[in-house]
Length: 108
Image (cartoon, rainbow, N blue to C red):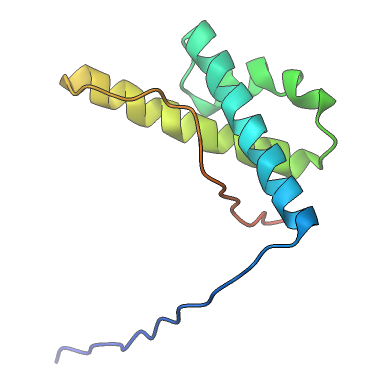
């Protein structure tokens, strides 16, 4: 017997506060710095990018979980770009231009 689960989605408008916009800009800058470091050093794996860029992100006044999340996001972008180039697809410059922040899982 086939069972289907209904999923309901909701569209919600959100006007971020000034503080939230500041965090989003800082996160985007951290991702862009990690991408630049990865491009210079030809690093696309999470481990190598973490070793190279974590200390470089020390001047940002943010919790370490945001730095690690930014490095993870950059590693995903660089790995995707590397895969596309390997398959022969043209790619754009992989610098983030829009605001995005994924929730941190916190400590366990």
